[in-house]
Structures are given as structure tokens and as C-alpha cells.
Length: 133
Image (cartoon, rainbow, N blue to C red; front, top):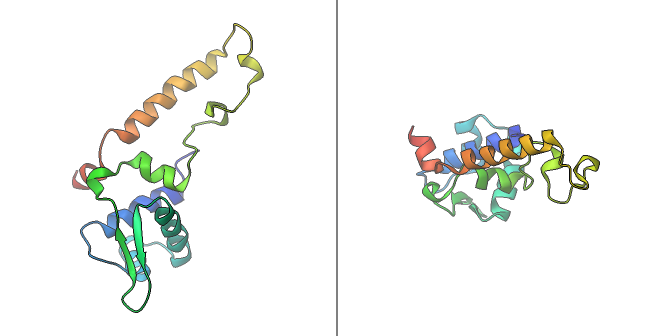
């Protein structure tokens, strides 16, 4: 997984909802310059992950279910794309022919180190801290 535009926009959706009682999709799109079809797709994934709550009807819209102080970038990114790997061979189920026997691929070992650093960096700060910087 690379950090996709969808992941970036998911953080924008959360930023729009931060400190708001309820926003419509149109209001979110206007605040964060996101197209409605893309916003709906992201909101559906954020709802499934129980990060946002959706309301139907005339006074419908979306609110945050989890405060930004309890969210970090990794949580949001995994709601959009559960496989947060810098390369496919980081996935536990991936079987690399270079990692058989007593020898481990030297590149794989280095990428594992980088992967751990990435995960640590994505969990270091809450979104509240990120938004307040």
C-alpha cells in the first residue's frame, strides 16, 4: 500500500467533521475540495470502520464517532486500505523465494525495518495533534 489519494482524502473528511455537529456530504466536499462520488466512497469505508456515523433524512449528514484525539493516521489509512505495506513482500502471507532456508533476503530485512518505522510514524501523533500543529 502506498498512501493513496483516497487515504489523504479520508483524513480531509475527518478534518472537515472535526468540531462540527453534523455535516452533509456537500458541506464536506465544499470544505475540503472533494468530489461527491469520492466523498461517498470514503464515508462508506469510514462508517464500516465505525469512525464516522451517518444519518439519513432531511437533516442527515455525518459526524465523527471517535474523537480525533483517539485517531491517528494509521487507523484512518487502514479503514481505507487495510494492507498498510510499503511493498507486497511485507505481507505475512507473502512467500518470497529469497526467504527460504537459513538465508533471508537482505533487501527484505531492510524493507521490514523501514516498514516498522513507517507504522511507528503513522501512530506517533493523534489527529488532534496533527490538526493543531
